[in-house]
Structure formats: structure tokens, C-alpha cells
Image (cartoon, rainbow, N blue to C red; front, top):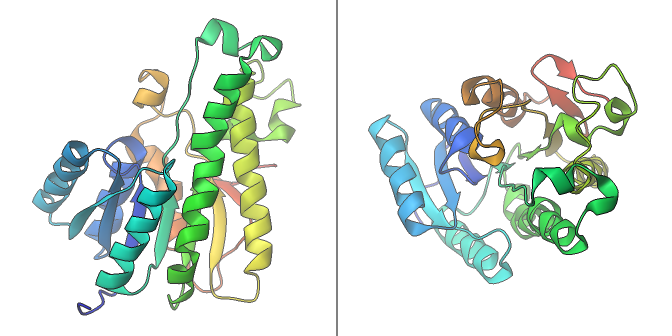
Amino acid sequence: MLEQPAITALITGANKGIGYETAKRLGSGGATILVGARSEANGKEAERRLRAEGVHALWVQLDVTDQTSIDDAVRKIDSTYGKLDILVNNAGAAFGDYAEISVPSKTDVNLLRKTFETNFFAMFAVTKAFLPLIRRSAAGRIVNVSSGLGSLNQHSDPSFEFYHHKVFLYNASKTAVNALTVHLAYELRDTSIKVNSADPGFTATDLNGFQGTRSVEQAATVVLRLAELPEDGPTGGFYDENGVVPW
């Protein structure tokens, strides 16, 4: 086993968008960045770009919807580093034609399952598999990238900016992500591990065809903050860059 770095951070979907920006900023602070990406070409390109920025980065093949791929990544990180300090569950997807998925009753059940498989079940599978390594950290941090669209409170409020954006399959998957955060934080309440959900806001990424109004630099701010929480920081919460987001 190689000498352990001060901080190891795995970011799923780190080859682009919010994941890449988070990787760059965490890495610039001295963390070793494990670039979780399914594609070797995309993962190695992100690794190259990060290293050009002075970041100690390493691509780790990780298809979050494939348990074998997840298990292989756990073994690789375990044998090389022996622990994991930060897990950023960033990988996510949106499927379907907007004209149909924006009407809940028209949602195709197969697309609903596909969305949950990527955005929720995969996140749970990754977290469960890596938790033994996170427990070895002196101060483990788990950040689940959620969305304000997952807030039931906000979706019940007509004054909410995105009140009419009722894309059930995506929104519900992020509500489920928040449930995972609450339950896992409770389980780990007597440990040094902190688990929180991050709302990066409506960010311009390929997930929305780059229609978002926020930059990845703005979006990564809250993710970074939750990944680097101090010992007295919160756990089991839902936050954007301005503070608490209602459930």
C-alpha cells in the first residue's frame, strides 16, 4: 500500500460539469482527487486536465449503475489508499421528452425506473460500498448532490421560482436522495462522518442542455463547503450556498 495522502476524495461523474469543477477546487486545496467516470477516454481526459491545473488526480473506472464496477473501484481505492475521506455523489441524469415528462400522469414508468436507477439506487449502491472506507477516515464527509426540485416544501409553494416545473421522474428521484441523506446521517450520528444534501441550483450543464442560469463555479460552492465541513459542522441537512433548503 502506498503512503496515504492527507485527504482522498472520490467524485462520481467528475469528468464534466459540477463534478469536474468540484474536483478542481478540492484538488487545488491539496486533496487527492479520484475521478469517478464510466468512460476511460473521458475519465483520463479529466485526469489530464486536472493534473495540468496542478491537481493530484487519478481516473477510477466507475459505472455507478454497475455493481461489479463499483466493487472493483472499492478494491482499487482500498488497495492504493486504504481509506476514503470524501465521497461526492454527483453523477445524475435526466431522461425523456420534456413535453411528456413535465406532465406527471404522462410519465413513462420505464423512464421513471431508469431515472431512479441512476439518481437514487446507484447513489445508494456507491455509498453503501464505500462506507467501510469512509469509516476509516478521521473525518469522513458524504455529499449527495440533490436539487431544489427535490424539495416537497418548495414544490407546494406557488411562490417558488420553479413551482411549475413538475418533472415528476427527476424531482422525485432527488426527493429520494434527500431521504437517503436523512436516514444515513441518523445511522452515523455517533461517528465523525457527516452526510448532507447539496442544492447547486439551476446550473448550465449538459443535463439541461446548458439552459441553466448559474455557472458550474457558482454551483460547486455549496458542494465544496459541505465536503470540507469542520468537526462542528452540520449533518443530515439540505443546503444551498445561502443556507438551509426546506425539505
